Amino acid sequence: MERRFPTLLRIFLLLILPLMGVFVRLSEGKIHISDDLDDVIDDEEDDDWKEWGKKKTPSDDEFDPPKLDFDTMSLSQIQEEMMRKQFGPAFGFVKLRLGSRRTPDMVSEIAMQWTKVLKTGALDVKFMGVDVNTVMFTMQRGQDTIELKEFILNQPEAYEIKVGDQAFRRPGDPPLDDLIEKLRREENKDDEDDDAGQSKDEL
Image (cartoon, rainbow, N blue to C red; front, side):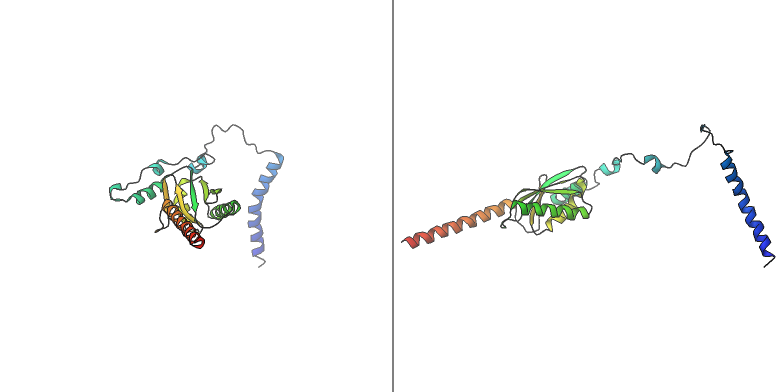
């Protein structure tokens, strides 16, 4: 053990002394780095570093049309493919289920709830109540429209979502105009029955 101690001390001093010399020269100011950096070659920057801070522009690959055979696709498949390739902002409307009495405050509450839920799912969508049966939405990333459509059609309050000219409903649901016409006919029939019942009572 006594033989090892001097050896370890020598190794320790051999490692420490050069560092001590550097610290002494730094404290005395003897090490000087020139401001003239013309002869310095800086090849450590990679492509990621050069691109840092620049606004990203969509690559040409993202704008390439899909390599699909539209002749064999149905109209709904073509529309869905077009929605995937949509860039930039998008907006549309959600029609709420008819037959429920809602106040404007209730519609605003639904809009706020949907906005918060989608924000937790990393979708930047803002909903606003338009009237007691309609909610408008705006979104920054149009390519998220398919996820939005799936979310909306899973909500019990929603009947139909309309993005541009395309309207989406749950499978088996009739178009909104047909549903409104059916409800009007039923309402008129009920009114006629009430009128017939009153005239019989009068006789």
